Amino acid sequence: MRALPLLLLCLSLPLSSAGCDAGEDDTSPEADTDTDTDGDADADADADADADGLLGRIAVVEAYRQDHDVHEGTTPTWGPLDVAWEGDVMGEWVYGCGDKTGDTGVWRITRTEGDCVLAVLQPCEGACEPPCESGTYCTHAGDCVATPRFTSAGTLTLGGLSETVTLQPGARGYQEASGLPADLFEGGDLVTLFASGDEHPVFAAETRGVASLDAALPCDDVPPAGQDLALSWTPSKGTRIRWDMFQDVHLSQGPRIRCELEDTGSLVVPAALMDAYLHGKRHTLALTRYTVSLAEIQGTGKVAFEAGSSVGCIVNEDHTPWRVP
Image 1: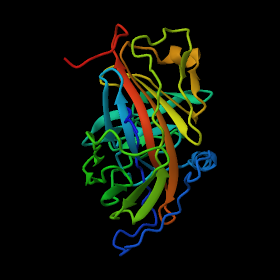
Image 2: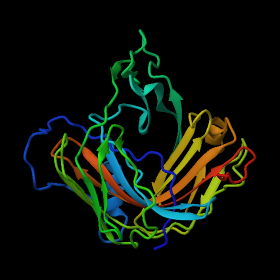
Image 3: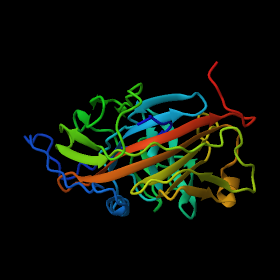
Image 4: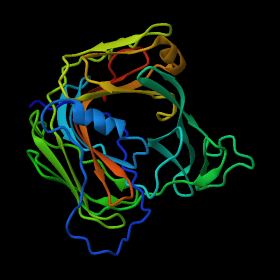
């Protein structure tokens, strides 16, 4: 399978540590996975429906950079966290509210249109009075709570690929493994995840590889205000689609759009959402087809495990492909 794109800046892996015993000797993974093994859409739809309160996410992606014509495999993964983000916060887009990372802010959903949401970077103190202190953020309920911290689930091993991949935890979570072979899996291949355990206990998951995504992104013509943004591609049964638009204003701190839906072969970002999004003229775009399963971590929460194919690009201020000199 030809590898396809990157530019998923946020597949997070927040895991709850409630009820976990980091010192427990658990050498056999017990994972309650929900995955699509027969090619129909039911399992993935169930996994998506069960994703409320999701505590983590890990992904392996065949990525294509459209404006550079580069194919590679990637693992856009970080985390896990000790607790999940709350309310309308987009936990996968974390800038931080801690002493070491700086009080930058959190991404909050401010508008929803159909399958799409608009998120805006807001200060950590939010509307809380008195303002939240460093290391905490303001919830949608107006309370200051501790910012989730990165923790370890041990070594992550991704199998069923053309090359076995291992990820190690660091100070800022699990770092992305880039430069992997472009052909990581074929559509329908079984892809596996095993976490050796540490602050979180041992867990495992499996999902299925997806067919290559053949979409052409609007890398030279992002619609102006007042117009819908429409995308189309050849659909694939039993998969889902995620569309991300990052407004690259002041180190990507501008508004962001995310759409998630079944893989029907088309999506439309409504003009009302585009109007609220368009504040600058440089954008990171990414369309991803994926399958997902949910692994239960000994009653502490669920982790999503995804295999995907993605197309991405960066558009500069005059709406032409931006290229590194």
